[in-house]
Length: 76
Ligand SMILES: [Zn+2]
Ligand SMILES: [Zn+2]
Image 1: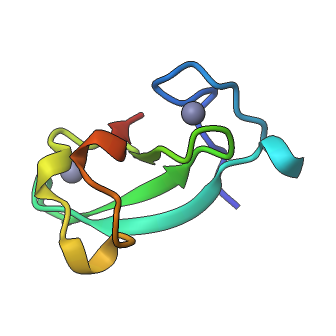
Image 2: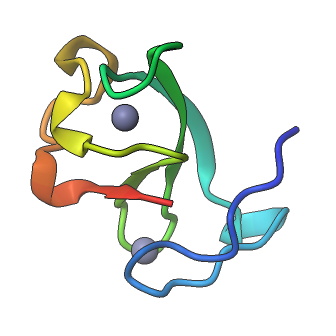
Image 3: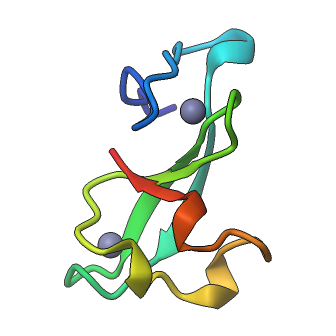
């Protein structure tokens, strides 16, 4: 299991286990050569945060849940 970053961009603290741990997913993105990021979903606000992403607008829509618009995306 990967270790999540310490907090979401809105300041919610994340833990490495238990209910404070963000759920881990992946997203396809055009901003890097390997074209994918680990995606952490904040358990408090639901923000989808991509690790090492430079431009959240480049996420492939087919790899993100419907309704996760740019406003609900973040970078960690
Ligand atoms: Zn949050
Ligand atoms: Zn990216």
